[in-house]
Image: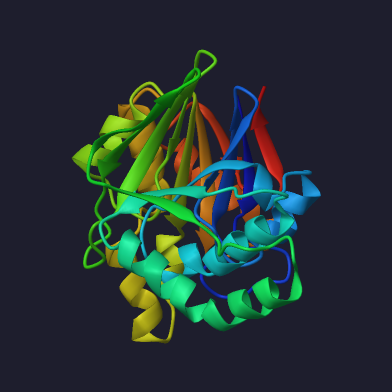
Length: 273
C-alpha cells in the first residue's frame, strides 16, 4: 500500500499546489480521498484515470475539498466503455450534494447522450453516507471512519485504511479530538491538514485568522502523531503554503513534540511501498 499526495495546497489557488486530494493504492486498487482543484490533472500524472477509481471518499463538504467532484463524475462517465457507477463515501449531506451536482450537469449530460450513440445512460453514483465505523471491507482492504471536529462544519470524517499489513490515516480538516485519535492509532502513515499558527496569527484579515480555531496547527499535528504512536507524519493542505526556504521551519515545529519521520507534503509526493 502506498499514498500519493495529489494536491497539497490551501483553499486559495497556487501555481504549484493543487487542491486537497490524496490517492491510496492498495491491493491493486485506487482509492481517492477528497477531490480538490486540479485532482484529475494530478491523477493523470500518476497514470490513474477517473475510470480506474475503486471509490471516492469525502472528508467534509467544504468547497476546496469537493471542487472537482463534477470533473471526476463526468470524466469517469465518458471514459468508461460500459456503465461504471462511482462509489462515493462521505458524511451526511453527501447524497444531496451528489444530486445537486448531477442536476447542474444535466445539460451537458443531455448533449453527450444526444451526440454519442454508444452513450445511452447518464452517469451513475453509488452514494454511501457514513457516521462512524466500517465504510468498506473487501478483497484485503478495510476502510473505517470516525467523526472529527471542524466545527462549525458538521459532520466531518477522518478515514483509516488497513491493507497489506499497513495502516494509513487521512484526517482532513480537524482539530485534535477523540475521533482523530481513533483513526490514527498506531498508523504507519498519518496525513494531516496543518496550519502555521504563528504566521496565520499575523494575517491582516480576520477571515484568515478565523481558520485557527478549526484546523490543527503543526504542533498539534505532531502531538497527535506522538500520542497515537504514528510512524510517519505527513503535513498536508498547508496554510499558508510555504516557500522552499520556510519548509524546514514546519518540520522543526513538529519535531519539538514528535520524534518520528516528518514529511512536508508536495504535489505528487509518494509515500510507502
